[in-house]
Length: 94
Image 1 (cartoon, rainbow, N blue to C red):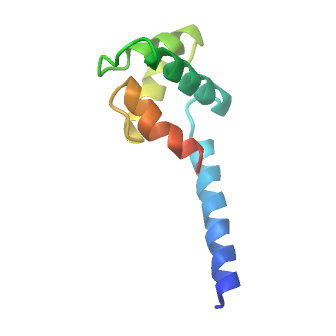
Image 2: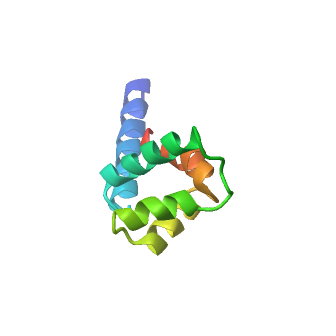
Image 3: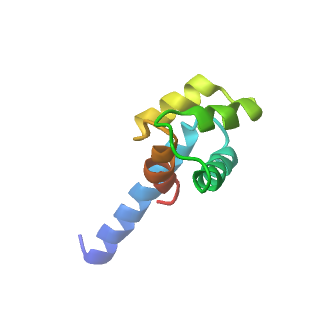
């Protein structure tokens, strides 16, 4: 297998991984981007309480399934609001 073929296989694998990631999202991808923006905006004026209070506030306002979304966030490296920004947001950029 040459370099081109390896690169193509890697790209196909990455696309498949992202598709699987997106299929398993507990709410619309668009709402995740809104959540990230919301938390980024709030982080300028409010310190993290090392819980999901701001995330809960956002999810409640959007009528999202809070338990499922928080579980998803925890599974993807977040233990609080600031970790949603630092650990989960980057997974949406890959």
